[in-house]
Image (cartoon, rainbow, N blue to C red; front, side, top):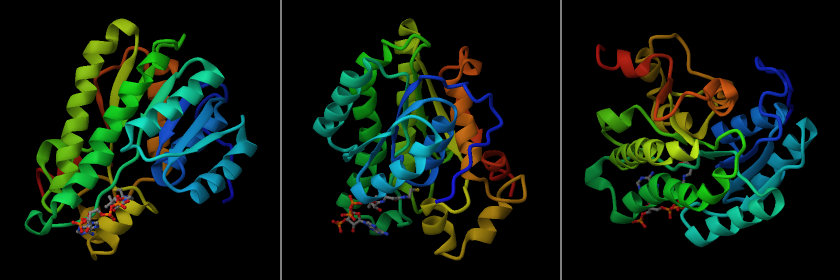
Length: 266
Ligand code: COA
């Protein structure tokens, strides 16, 4: 993949930050990893597919530091602690944790199997629990104040017909974010949600809208006239992790072209 190192941010804005990004080998996670790598962070990728991880590592390393890549499923607490242990052995701290790994598919609730429900809730909600829980020891050691960035969704509040599993899991993520923002404030750890809208060239948009012939309809739900780009989410994740985000915790940052608002009116 051709990579550039241009950014709207100062090139050392994340200097020396140790950042774990789950689901970091493709899509939004890879976009965030590339931005962090360009801006001076030590990037740690977590993903299920070793081959995809190896490609991502090879693409990212020319932009900055060595990239650590771990093949692990966020659903496994043991796998999660093994990743965190290795990061702690190498760096002794975790400055940023981005819980981005997610699964979703369109399926009316009537047809959803218990295992389908469980798969999505396990990845999205329990995976976020696993990494938050295991990483606290490292986040407490950050000299900048640890940052947790959870990827949630506006549909956590509205519900999502056809994706009740994902909406329910993300509602849990949003509640977890807010709970931890209060509990971990005394440790100077900031905990926030990014709520992405439809982002072009991602698995989510392909599965949920393009493959179902719903892309045009989804576009009409936005205030703006096009889908977002992975850089839009990456820039939000840089902002929250940088010193510009020092006084921000417990917030939902919508990066969705105004979809959350217009949906209520159209
Ligand atoms: N419609 C209905 N049920 C589906 C489905 C679909 N499109 N896709 C998967 N499921 C069900 C499976 O049938 C299975 O249930 P069953 O055992 O009762 O048949 C259950 O979900 C688990 O599926 P499986 O493929 O074994 O799970 P997995 O752990 O390998 O994958 C998923 C997890 C299901 C979330 C998979 O879609 C995935 O890995 N997605 C990752 C990428 C992604 O979703 N990106 C978009 C994010 S917006």
